Length: 128
Image 1 (cartoon, one colour):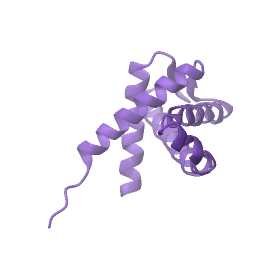
Image 2 (tube, rainbow, N blue to C red; image 1 turned 60 degrees about the vertical axis):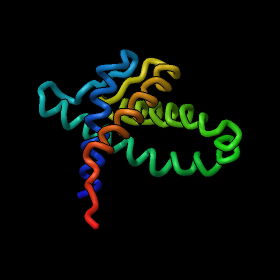
Image 3 (cartoon, rainbow, N blue to C red; image 1 turned 90 degrees about the vertical axis):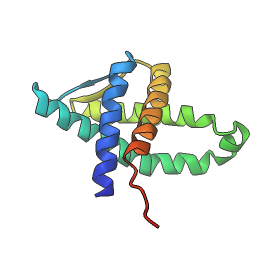
């Protein structure tokens, strides 16, 4: 259940990011609202897998850079992860398109902020 919630949050954050950042767009696999929603969900799934596998490896290898830059390197790492998702989904014939590296940095920043805010809104409260 938690996985599905994170997937929906990331898909919604990706949709908002495409509305805010003009250099990031999504091309659905077919016309229609259902196809568009499924495309956003599929891209969010691909982003989650890429972030979990490749992102973890990069974060472990780049740990000294994270320390040296006080975490600012994460903007660059997240932009590369967004570009990787763009490449993977583009190879499938649909999906995420990023106009360039700096659009990827801006898109990753906006996507991260929106996903964080949405995560705060839907976080379950704990009863003690």
